[in-house]
Image 1 (cartoon, rainbow, N blue to C red):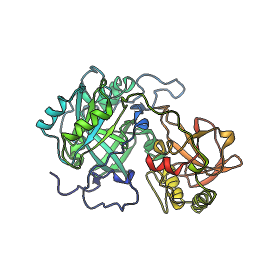
Image 2: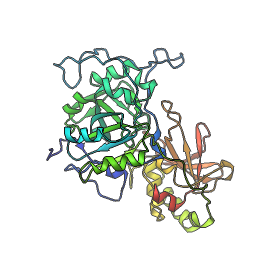
Image 3: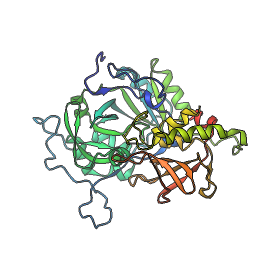
Length: 403
């Protein structure tokens, strides 16, 4: 068991669940999973550089490493080739423990009705380019089968990861300023950004090989991905959690659930923010105009797009979830033509995963929005862009608090 965290590494994801707690960078604390239902269905997809800028996207747009047989993290070791893709397994439950999974625990989980396949991984928070990034270390030959076909089929992507590269989410790469194929600082030396790959596993924003993860000091075998396509996901989750010790966390992914038993919800006027709350949120957001965008920042001096929304609405007494695809569930959708100041605007800008909610802004009124755009920019008021606009959400404090 790890008693001390290596420099730059934490097992803490709790800031994505309850941001009111002060982060402690001096010790490991339990790895907390952001448990969502509807929003954790985003597939793992990738974006990397095409060989000719004018050409349309191709099946395998990842540029291979110049020395694919040599690992950045273990230069004296030969990298094993990635095995061909086998049977695909859609993930349904993501589980993280404080200690490594034991063979006895895995054997019991394998016998849970409906479980068809399982994959072990290593999970922790790693500092990349000065940013805390929730990272999963995997075996490329086997983990690829738990990603969607377009990603699983990309031999160059997994060869790059096996050779020591890190694949980061599109939001971290694009908005966070981590350019494809560039080298960024890590806790044990530089790492190459081999691809943009959205994991779909909640807060995970980076994937490395298990060899690289262990060179970085990640804990071993503390994460488990379970595929159970014919099992009720809620029942699966209950059964698995009964077999594991206190402190274990889990999240449903691509949930298999029974049809909803309730009718479409009505939203009475009292469900939404009061005029006083809206004024407080807008005033708070406007007080941060000119402050720099920093990926993962939650204020009070720097912000990313969803961090600004959470902070501003928190000043109005509204408990907002932390990330964009959670905030998308903070209330009902309304037409853009009916948007009112204080509503939230959302975009799907991730070309690696067109269904993923990747950006949020606050509607200011008269066709303007207030937002934190991306690395190199600042909090500002700008005209609304309708390109890739996913929709408009009217915030309900009750709905936001339940996400």
